Amino acid sequence: MEIDTDVKVLAPIRNPANKKQSFDVLEVWGTIYKGQYRMHLIYAQLGGSCVLMGQEILEHASL
Image (cartoon, rainbow, N blue to C red; front, side, top):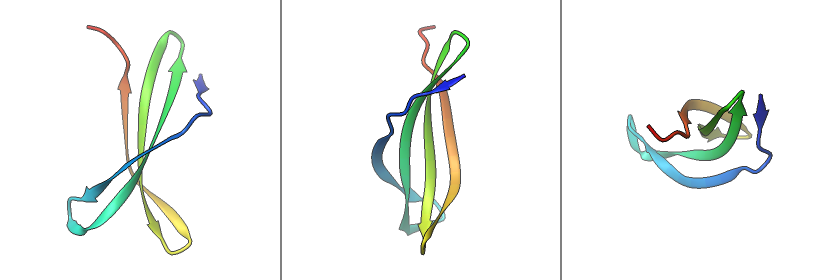
């Protein structure tokens, strides 16, 4: 397993439970065996810490 060291900051997304709040999104790529995956890490910044709110992992594949 390998995770790329390049991290891309994406546009924030709205909190579906509270439209006044938003979550930050980071994108990283990784490989496991022969598969390549795109991962979005969705987190909230609260005071001096970050809380992981969700993740999205998609295989980069042509079907």
